[in-house]
Length: 77
Image 1: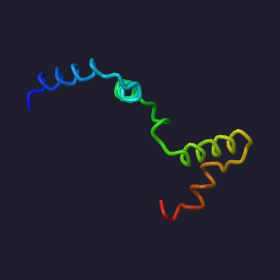
Image 2: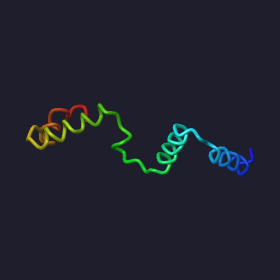
Image 3: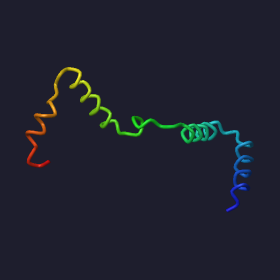
Image 4: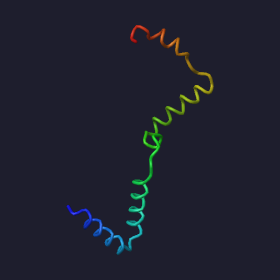
């Protein structure tokens, strides 16, 4: 495949486009390909909610000290 020729062909095609919906889709693709994603944006909604619940629990003192957890699960560690 001649990458340079393919790029020129695509550029010419885009230059002749009159369909705004296609242009918007192309812009969205460009923006997504150049945007550096934060890991938070790559996890599922359920994973974000779980993390947020854990942070709320921690903020409200609903935690178990590490030493107690180690004692409880010591035989498996």
